[in-house]
Length: 337
Image (tube, rainbow, N blue to C red; front, side):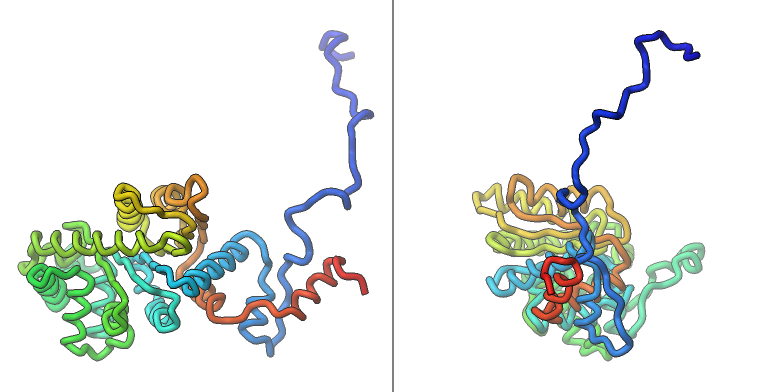
């Protein structure tokens, strides 16, 4: 006997409306599933085998937007943090520069440190825990002198910090220049803007540091980035890779400046690549700049040493052939034998 009153009874189910499963639109079908690959499979075969679902689909759409930007002659700006260099991605990005898939680089201050050290000695990323106690973290003389002297030279010549450091490295002809983003960008005349936060980088506490020079050259680079963002209108792409705070804030202010000056900025693609999706990249890169139909924003979560090579492969390889798509359609039952 139930303790509830007679008028409170479990809802009856006999009149529930149902429908045939086959009549329902579904988000996932077997034509989108992953497929096994064989030992002799090519890179294109591997890319074709990936599931056309979620992050893979987003990656393919980003690659499509980058190809379209190249065809239209629109900027393809890579905003990168130091982790991109430390995970060994420089050779891939340099190759994409040569292929026209990178037309500008915006970097935070840590990129300058790590890229310069790679060019000079072929190694970077010190053990902070081991050196911090002795006060030796970031005290490498060559790194500080190079970055700070470049800032002073840039202030004198009224050039940006990225260009000034690229020029300084090229003049040194370092032994590992082929692995340097700064050297590659300078040689190919690709804009390389540097956006430093005073006090955030190791070079800022060296005796050679000049706050006025750092401020002037990085402000020049902000204005140069804003011009590149202005040119994104009508098909440009901005990728934020490995910067959780500085570059998302810089990019949003550049977008604001462009629109404040009365320029149109629509039909753009933005994307954030990182190990975790943080507030500022999601808000300042993926959502706000493309709001109200101004474009499309994407989020790709994962290790840079995996996601960036995958993006490069999507850009370089011809992914889907007609025969492959027909096979997938047959498997899904859309084409009858």
